[in-house]
Image (tube, rainbow, N blue to C red; front, side, top):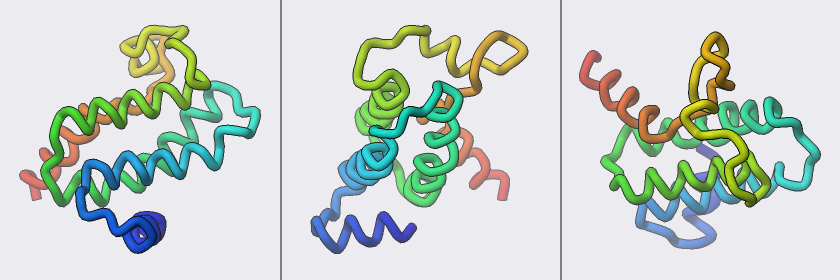
Length: 119
């Protein structure tokens, strides 16, 4: 939440889809130069990027284009701005199925919306 408020005040951004992209970009750029393993990068995405997204995604409606853009941003971070080396569906799969439990923003958004309905 603190990063979102700083970005809003510095850039005077009022458009939430752009704010999501800017916030995630700032978070991931802080970790880009560190030599993390694939599992380390997934941990950064889950712990830092997803925690910032929960606030934005749970309270507002977001367009599918911005969600797809954010998802692409996360996978670019995962593969150092190169093409995907492992299919995204395999990365998102559970450990038992040979995956790494990578976060899928589109499904994450759906889960947040469903949790609001259940409350």
